Image (cartoon, rainbow over all chains, first blue to last red; front, side):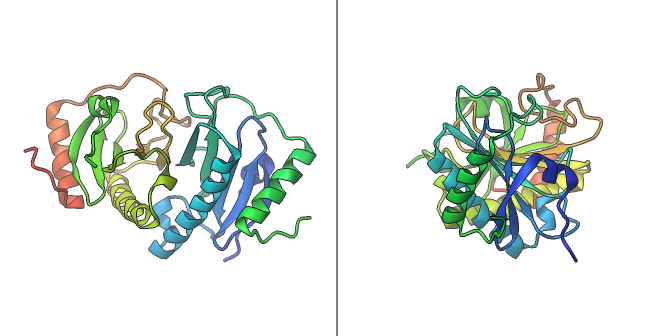
Length: 139
Length: 139
């Protein structure tokens, strides 16, 4: 079955590359270092829709992304699969800081995103590609 | 190292029992079926503070809790490790409904909890114990 990224996720993010299971997306909001993993399989809604093997792979990919975010610096990583608005299964990783706009509340639904400048995205992508060995031919 | 549950988590929840790695807590808010898993190890803050083996165990325990919540009925499961307020590592599992008070926003920080009646807690605990084979000698 072919994988098609949800239109809203596509509109709100930059594609960083693909891991074995997941597409790696950067949320286009420069206020928070924010990576979304989307398993590239059709018809997933809940984490439990993944097989045990797929879930284990997502866990590994999530840990790698988390490690990269922690290296960027910050106070607390928020990891979550919500999906109340976009039903396609996706896993958020948001590095929080005690002086960020939504702290200590959740970022989802808090306030409008502030887009990146293109050169910022390029730098983050280079760093992510190197840390995660991403399969990406976007640049 | 002995494990001590964070005082706020203790105040806001009922203890349902313990799994191999995690304490199983029911959030005392009858508006949402809401289970929190707390790995019973001292000093954890981020999911990545778990070893790979511990993380794999938490994943299994999370899947079992998720399955039970899905069986209770609802529209979307929200799973997340935030920890902006309580830093002790804990993993939320909240079953959401399209007509719940916070939908489609996140539940965290939305509005004051509405406590359960004791008999509701007892019924949920019986159901959870049977589904998860919980080690609990509370009753």
